[in-house]
Amino acid sequence: MNTPNQPLPPIFDSLTMEAELEIPLEGKDFKTASGKFVKLAKHSGFCHGVKKAVDKTVNASTHNQPEDQPTYVLGQLIHNQQEIERLETLGILTVQTLEQVPDGANCVIRTHGAAPALITQAEARGIHVTDATCPDVRLVQNKAIELAKEGYTVVIVGKENHPEVIGISAFASEVAGATIVAINHPSQIAEKLASVPKRRIGVVSQTTQMEDTFFDMVKHLTMVAKELKVYNTICPATFFRQHAAADLAKQVQLMIVIGGKNSSNTTHLAALCNELGTPAIHIETAKELEGVVALQQAQIIGVTAGASTPEWLVQQVLDFLKTQ
Ligand code: SF4
Image (tube, rainbow, N blue to C red; front, top):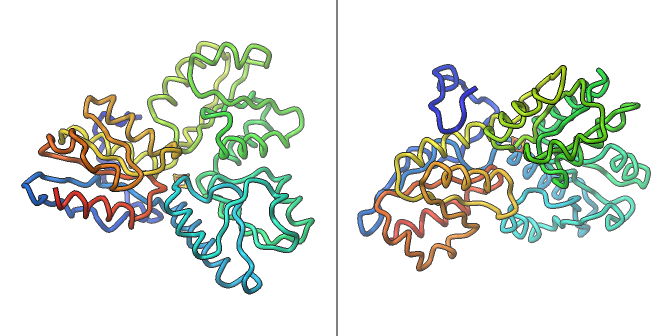
């Protein structure tokens, strides 16, 4: 498997990403007012999972709810505060716990998924559940269940407290006798696996994991387990965004990465560019670019956006850059 700083083999170039919706900005490279050149990443912005989740949620709030009642989303629908605020104006409210959702109300399960017990509890209270779990996340949940049923100790390569990882872990934990461990870095392997069976280990990844981290983790686990079964469940949207960002970073002097500071996939894009030696500025809005010296100095600038960054935010940044 290629890492993001290696070119993709031809098979990937020719992949038609039917499910993948790209922002209609690709190919719209431009010159700024002072003659700087701005290039846009080939793959960036809303992925198909986020796009569908936002559409489903807006649809639920428009058609399903009793009039004047808000639609609740359990946890942030996507990791983008500005889009969350836009949705609030449509009566779509974020809550942190199921207890905050009134009986009989509409409640959306976000792209990251949720523990099955939570959905059962909601339905028992007459709450109308709209499940916007991304199909790529569902795939990881199913693979983790499969590994647990086969008797592997399941290692999820991801952040233990990330909602997607919590959901995957909850699904696999329903298998009798399952052992599930989330590990985010090879340095944690010894501690995290100290008291669990290590002979047979099954591996899945948080969908937005950095490729290099995942491969590094698998390499280290081969030194621990006698039998290792690996599913690379990094989602295609993440895969393509990482490769496109790496490709662009090599052509420019400065990268601007747009997206939530709490968004894993956006943070990873910025980290990837920095690792390749191209400074990256991670911003949520165009305002953060005002007066930035690195931007004033750069003549060739690359722009990318995380999978949870809406097109309207990207466009605001591009409009700002045009004036520079
Ligand atoms: S980043 Fe991947 S897993 Fe997450 S919502 Fe988008 S397509 Fe789904």
